[in-house]
Structure formats: structure tokens, C-alpha cells
Image 1 (cartoon, rainbow, N blue to C red):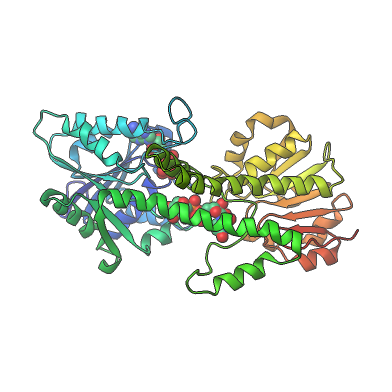
Image 2: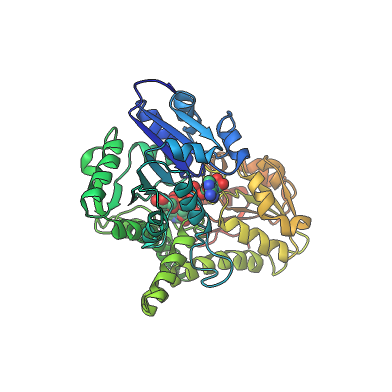
Length: 462
Ligand code: UDX
Ligand code: ADP
């Protein structure tokens, strides 16, 4: 394909992570007429993308990658060459929360982003369309433009915002059938021309009525606001779960009743031990920082409370464990079923399981972690409390001799385990804390477990 006359566009993506990798794989698979290259500073990541052990676990991804890899999809560390050849450059480098200096703990750390802008400037020899894929604070495109415009090569760069709304675990499906694709551009002639190039790329498989266009700032803000609204729904239902536990109301019944109101809708109302993932907390902190910067203190406080409730929910979960296990868990074995921040991913960023495991370890429990995909990440996350923690892929082994099980991730496999066998091998009284409300609580109670769901009455034998 490399020298084929059929190549109609050269597309580059800088950053081969959870966003860049799957997005480019789908574009390449859907559009054989484009040559798509994904570059990254990390050679280990690139080697993994070129192997059958991809650096991220995502259902259906390997199949898609295999369709296009070395046909019109290439993974490389040669960033300069990639920039030189490309006409459209997607930027999906990481933008974590800043850990130092002004805005530490809230603002986005834009150092990787700025370095990329400078790389683009250095290696470019022709006009380019730059597409922001990473989630960025509103008005970042302006900073990108200022850096890029500071060139005396006579090159024009047009910066677009095209935030990615995919969720992990369903990335391939989300990319194949997006609810919407959002493209923000300047409303100038050059801006609209660049926007049309991107619209044309997506229109290869996305119905045009789902391709929305807006100004750049609306597109940037829509991404932050979408994630904030989704996280807010979870914190709302989690706050109600606390009240349910005090009043004998059942949070699943309440969520069902609320969700049948079509104005509210029934999705994202599952009470849980708390939300995790790389986006929700980071994006809300980002929003809060922006509000504070513009003097909107009440608005900042409003969104900050979504994170406060999430932290409260995680703490509340551990407190319940401690209280019902006779206020001491020192020396007790506790099995965490799942460590990923949600099912169908090996990603553990901001996973509630991290906080829960650390707090249990602080109480001197012996914590055993089991997860089908996330153990490697879990080992890194828990490096600071290694003495108190062990890891196994086998849930039966994890639960053997344990005083308690806590379900942290809604993996399907935990629904179908032989809980009689598990109960028989546990210390008694055996406790089960279902942080995802996925198990059959009545049945577990019949087997002999003392069951503590989220937002529902406990089922106890004492
Ligand atoms: C999210 C957004 O959904 C996506 O649009 C955006 O592009 C990136 O951030 P992601 O973080 O991959 O995606 O996962 P998501 O499915 O949104 O779940 C986030 C967290 O909320 C998980 O920990 C999940 O378990 C939790 N959750 C979700 C609940 O606790 N209850 C729910 O009802 C839904
Ligand atoms: P996301 O979830 O937003 O995709 P990831 O952390 O998974 O974020 O991926 C971001 C990727 O960007 C990482 O693989 C990282 O190595 C890469 N990266 C960071 N800075 C640069 C840079 N200047 N040039 C190329 N790649 C970069």
C-alpha cells in the first residue's frame, strides 16, 4: 500500500494510547484509501501495537488492528517523518492533572501537548490540519495556534477540536457507531475548509446527521461538560444510595423509577463503590480550575461536589466493611474481586479499587487482588503497600481462607462463579460486599454469606 496510487490522504496520530490507538485503527479499517500512521515517544508501546499483544485490552480491537496493520495502518516511533508526510495530524498525547506548581491537583498538565506543538512546527514543510483529540481545557487551541503561528516558513496550520467520546471497554463499538462526532473549527474560510476535510473522513462510515460542527471553544467545552454530566449522574445516584441504606429504600428500585422518566433516561444510574477512569475526575478538576480562573466560584464548588461525593462513597464502602467485621480487620484476609475501574478493560487509572485496597492495607488486612486483565497495573498501583497485598488471577484461590470478598469491578465472570464452593472455603462468618450490585444477593444469603450491597438493605445471619 505504501506507494500505492490509491492513497488519498496521509493521516498521522501523535500518541498511541487508549484514544489514539483504537481511533486510528477504526479509521484505517474503515477507510482503506487513507494511509494512517500512529507515532509515540514510547518504543515499548509501539512494539506492542506491532505485535499480537496490544498495549491495551479492548474487546474487538485486535481484530480491527489486524485488518489494517501494515496495509494502511502503521505504528512507528519516527515522529518527525510522520509529521513531515501528514496532511492531517490528530494529537492524542496525555494531558494528566498537573502535580506541581500553579494549579497543581486541578489544572491540566500541558507539557506533552506543548512539546507536540513544537515537534509539529519543527518537522513541518507544508500546510497541515491539526486535530485536538486529547481532552483539553477550553481555549487550548489558541495556545497551539500561537506556537504554530510563530514560524517563518510560510506554513499555515488550521487547528480543529474533535473531542473523543469513546468509553473504554466499548471503544471499538463507540467508534464504529458514535452517538455523535463533534468537530469545532474557526468560522473563517480556512477553518471551514479544514473542518470539511474532517467531516469527509468521518462521513466514510458515520451518518452525516450525527456529525456536528461548532466553534472551537464549544467543542472543547462540550467534552468537559459531557464527562462532568455523566459523572454527576453517578454521584447523584451514589448520594441516594447512602440514604437508601438508612431508610430501607432500595437504590435499584429508585433508579428504575427515576430512569423511566424519559426526560431523565435510565443509563448511568448504577450505584457503585464510585466512579473511576482516567477522564471523569481529571475533566471535572479541569472544569473547576477554569471556573475559578474566570471568578465563577459557585460554579466551581458545584462541580467539585461531584468529586467529593465520589470520594465519600469510596470511604463509606470501607467504613461499612470495617464496622460490620467487628471493627477490626487487622490480619484478616480480604479478597477484592476485580481491580479495573470497570469491566472489559485492564485499565486501573483512578479505579476505586486502588483507594479501597490501600485503606484496607492501612488497617493491616491482608488484601488479595484478583482480576482477569488488570493485575499488571494493580501491582504498580499498590507498590506502596506491597507487604499487605498479593495477586492471583484465580478468584477461587483469592477467596480461599478469606474472611470477606469485596466486588470492585462488574466483570461478567464474577456472576457465574460457584459461590457455594467459595463459601465452603472461607472463614466464618463469611462477608460479601458487592460494590457493583451485580450478584444474586438472596442466593448468596441462602448459601450462608452475610451480604452488603450498595444502597440496599444488608442480608445478614446475625
Ligand atoms: C468516560 C465517558 O463515558 C466517555 O464518553 C469519555 O470519552 C471518557 O470517559 P470511561 O471512563 O471509559 O468513559 O468509562 P465509563 O463507562 O464512563 O465509566 C466511568 C466510571 O463510572 C467507571 O468506573 C464505571 O464503573 C462507573 N459507572 C458508570 C458507575 O459507577 N455507574 C454507572 O451507572 C456508570
Ligand atoms: P489517552 O487515554 O488520552 O489516550 P494515554 O496515556 O493512554 O492517554 O496515551 C497517551 C500517549 O501519548 C502515551 O502513549 C504517551 O507515550 C504519548 N505521548 C506523550 N507525549 C508525547 C509526545 N510528545 N510525542 C509522542 N507521543 C507522546
